[in-house]
Image (cartoon, rainbow, N blue to C red; front, side, top):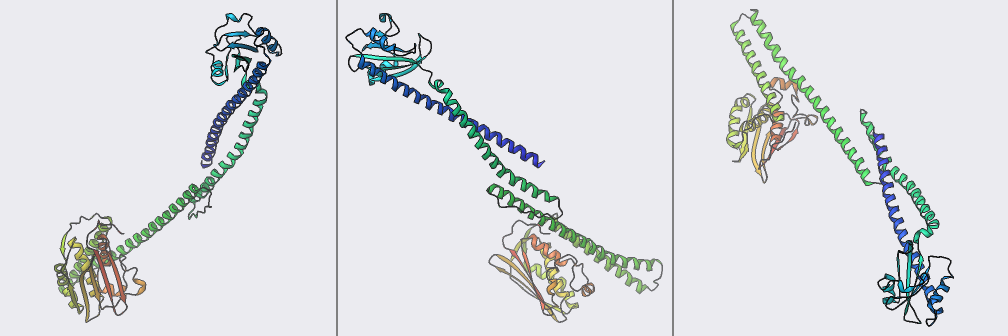
Length: 479
């Protein structure tokens, strides 16, 4: 298909080239013919003017002029040649072709006569009324009398030399066309060859992992096409890598979500079967089982809610009501809700809050505080401390969450914001949670065009720094 299009383009360019060349040759030939015709006319006029001056010197204006012009004409074999003598007023005095010059009309308005009186000599081309053939007329003022001499001869102009000129013109056209055809073929080849090569490279797109290689072409437009294809190829590869990565993330997500839900469901089913089969007779043990069932269902509910929250944040389906959120009261509320967990883990919470507010959704900022502080408490050491600082910089609002906990290994720092990723799976299972807390934090931060940084050292502690721009921009979606 591509080859057919290239051939058609070559034919189209070739036809247009030949058309333009033909028009140019026609124009050149016309100009050439006009120039040659003028040269022939000027040359003939000069020859006839010379003849008139010779005749002027041979004429005896006091004698019989009719006999003299007849004698001069007899020297020319051409019957159409005509010699005429006129007075200064345009009246014919003698004419070689007319016996009675008295019957002839006045020639005062003839073009060649007007020019001769004005400039000394004149010439004109026209069809003879008497003979009905094209004639050239040349007139000149007599040097030896107040008369005007005029000579007329048949004049075919360029046609008289057609046997010589036409072969030259034909030869010129043939040579020009031949050279042009050779040059046009080379030109078309230089244009279409790169297109064919580019098309050949594009066929590699059917391969699993195509690699395009283009030459450096003489035409910049071809290089632009090649560069554009390479850019598109890189963009497609990046998109495919992103799609593959997202596919893996989705698979891991569903696998982890299934695992996280399957374990509590299995436990709940086990407790229910024991109770249904009357295998638990002790009321205290039965109440303990029911309490465990309630805890597991609560965990499943929290997990599902967190999954839905992340999904809505990613797709921007969640309806967000923005308002001016006062940070310090909100932080105090979160600290109070986490106080029982902090006492249980023997961790102290210390806050330093600059009185500021930001345009945001209260629940989202609360989720951010809760998840970061919960992790800082759970993964701390007995007698440890969680330090929360809320401050501002010239263009940003800054939240800092610093703990004295177990820290995060270097190999895990890049993955802690992934869904269900746990650094210490055994400790995480013991401490509870859905494994989605930091993933929620990441999505909330991205929703407000902010960024989050992590600094951590094993057995020393971790520090999360969240930065939001002071003037809220349009939220964007980062998955």
